[in-house]
Length: 186
Image (tube, rainbow, N blue to C red; front, side):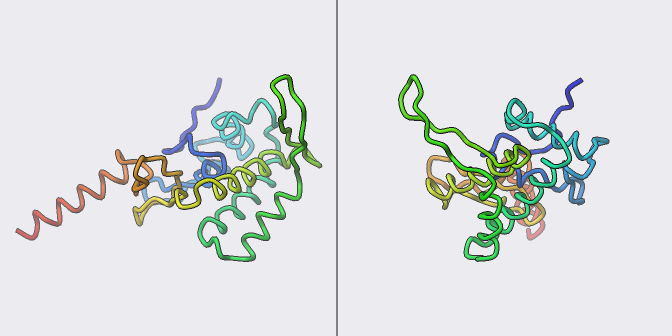
């Protein structure tokens, strides 16, 4: 039986999706890699790999989990403070475990990722994805505007003004709170 991904926000770019393996649930920080929802830590990793489409290339095992948690901490620090030199060094340390190999395919020039140890693959992939987000749209990497939310998203809205991880959840709560405050003032 395949376990459904219990996280409230999925489908973000891999780097932000990795950050979103920690979220607030009923006021408590929940971690997909810490045995949430009756899953073992490695089962949580398997859910994440499947959710991101990486399960066909990488295995869910203890070594992969350790490396992925290292990448998650590095990315969390880098996203929180892009000017933090030590955070950049942590992301670079993850990136040291892989590289891009230029290839020639039937369609023309291509690229293939190579890893010194396959268990670093998902961590390296997430760190590499973060670099791509920084290259293409660094101003669209956002944290949810809700003070009680820890989720991140890539703002793909036309005008780039998205504020909430989910309008249905955090955005709706903010609107309801503002409405309640206005009606109370009357």
